[in-house]
Image 1: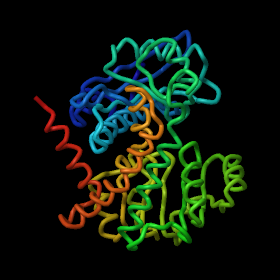
Image 2: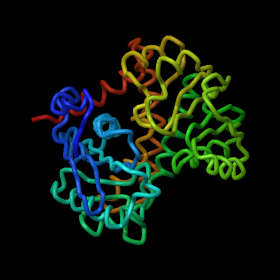
Image 3: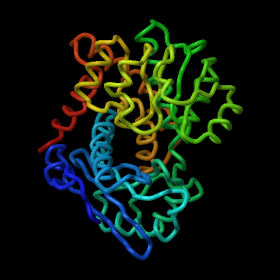
Image 4: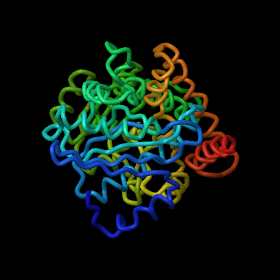
Length: 357
């Protein structure tokens, strides 16, 4: 796989900057597979993280994405108290038109070649059916169908964790955690976003939804009586809670200046385009930000439990504890006058350091 632009000429440099242990480039002309597997840190355990299939503009964008995502998985596992490291994989292509059984099996061979240093799972553009194909080639995969003894789609559990993180942020901001009557914009109504809409609407929240897939918008709108909004104007809406649940970097210098909300709590990874700059901008605006890698850890908690014999009730119980952890992080940030992202990051890093020999 050829990596072209100025940033990607320094793959090793990028790895060193972010602290990655290993990056694997996968290419197979017969199946059309082009993939990158990134292992960030295995101090706490094997690197576990989902596989994302996306039609990236170029290989450099794919590399940038997988490096950021795998790094985030390290801290997600650490803040959740899991004995896992951080990893991620991206497959370059259109998941609707380019994905085949043969391609997924070939990807499974690459995962298997790493000997358990990386364990994959479902992410954007993937399904439990795809994980089934991967499972035929390697045992280092989670999120396989329940019929095969797996935990199935982790999305509902991810959404469950985001829901409880959102309630914790609401309690911190307003003194009580009920979402009844709260106006919530859910940006991205894929597997996770739709389930978050379900949880919040069942509690009586007023839901606004947006997505690039208009058919999906109509479906979710009719199912949960939510209002569709489109275009860049979403960032100017006067709402209580903004829930980014699509791709990352939606919290940037442009959008943060426009946001008119009190709480940010969503499922997307890497929501802050620049962790320091934009974390501080949100803090200065007085918006309560529930760190993404903290509250979207439910899916990871769910697939981790699969490794040791899946128990859905235990998984949901552990995921619900995101509520307490979120309150602790928000309080720490307030007391120490730091951003909520930094508060969560400090605890995650300390847990990793404490386990180094």
